[in-house]
Length: 310
Ligand SMILES: C[S@@+](CC[C@H](N)C(=O)[O-])C[C@H]1O[C@@H](n2cnc3c(N)ncnc32)[C@H](O)[C@@H]1O
Image 1 (cartoon, rainbow, N blue to C red):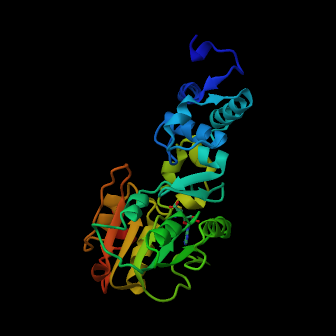
Image 2: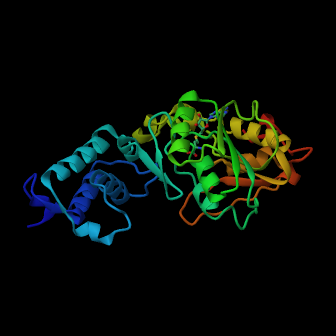
Image 3: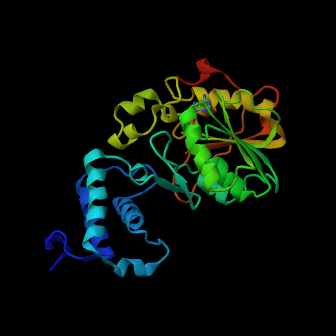
């Protein structure tokens, strides 16, 4: 008997349940763009969380799923398809840099390629030293700020966000990871009220052009619009402001790392005299610009909006 013609409620192994859920998600036409790469990943995320399984335990696949457990998993898969709610919001949890974060509709679901830079402690691009002062702009769930604090145990991190609701989620995650003594959250429009200079400024700001959101997959509608849309026809208004403000907040030898997604060409046109570095990522994703403080100092090479290639 195959898994497809089993009676509803009959016992399955986790492997069989995973295969079945994967097919259902594929047939349901869901989009996996918020931290998972495929329907199988998405199904595994739902099932492993619902059953409290360990992703590192290969024996999990052979475990028998009790009928009540199966019903729990199937309810999640059903909601994932019917409501198109991303798995991370269904579960209230997302993973970033191998760390769990509470997430809900107040914050973007963590998925930035910044994870790879942080896991490598920004090598070979830069060496922030053992105890860097780090500023994150637009912290959302706090995932980047917290992962930086844990990657650099001597670091002091200031993390800003304009949205009080997002900062409430970040505060819960700061407490969850026990980094309250080293990660300071601050409600601000970009650099507003931020004092002192930093070794590293990191930011994954909203940068999606408004026009691109019109045909967005239904999954994106669950995320806060203010976390996605960055202003201007190319979506890069906030990115330009972050670059223009960076020189005043970086120490000599410091770096700015700012994510722009598909906006790489527009950014190069907007700042023709800046020597951007563009790391490539083994796990996918692109569009994080690295700029050295020395390059930003004085004239930061901005042409401003008119020269941004629109
Ligand atoms: C793309 S999300 C990034 C969240 C998180 N850093 C991550 O990578 O998952 C952008 C965040 O920037 C915040 N934001 C938008 N405009 C801002 C501004 N002018 N100043 C500070 N934060 C802002 C949003 O509220 C949102 O939380």
